[in-house]
Length: 312
Image 1 (cartoon, rainbow, N blue to C red):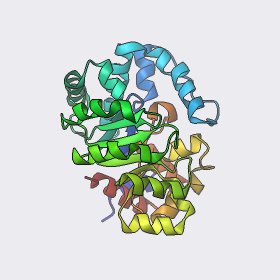
Image 2: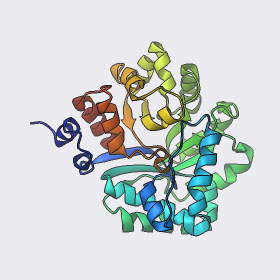
Image 3: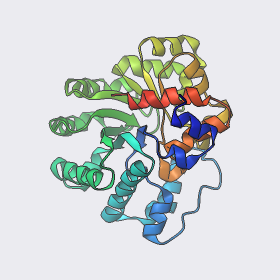
Image 4: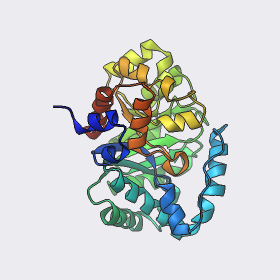
């Protein structure tokens, strides 16, 4: 019997896709909501990006001047987090890994207040979603100054995973080794952004140096059959964000996205949103984009969807 997800894709039906369980395992908190939700709250239109972004810095500048300006301060931050959980419920995201930075914990007054606020928002707006919070460190983090803070954060056993995001290779990846050993001891899943802008060799270096279990993006691995075979044999999952890659100029379009090559080599992959408030594509729309482009079949995309739901 044909799965409803396959039928929804072949029908090109976004409304049907939105009713089917999915995961979103690469989602930055405060950027995971729907633009229309923020527009309605702020009572103002948000114009989409006029063109692809030339860099992460240009993307951040657009986000600040087109989105954050309409929801500033503490209240605006909470509204954007609320929007992320509302989006998860609307798109039937049953497994959500959403990342937060240490500065966000400080904004809410420390871990106890932070945990209470986030858990309350999740229960209120997306009660059916299994929430897997992720601690995300900037690649420019001064690792010597943050160790004590991380020890206190880890002691709460609330975060499920750890990540490094921002400009790749802002400093040598080995500088994070001590922090990742600390996170591993605390039982966190080890992830990092790699291979979004860098090379396949840099993906491999990050995995081996930090003992990563997952990579956010990782699409540069498609440059190396040897590295793809290694990732596949070691079950290192890549949490891929197609529209993000297109809008940041990492690929020309959906029809040439390297998720096809990664899938063919047996590398575990998932489909995710990254920054939905910027890229304006839900998980359902990401699947539909890949199917409409003819890159992956409906059955193949269903295999990817199932793997995402079974991730943990």
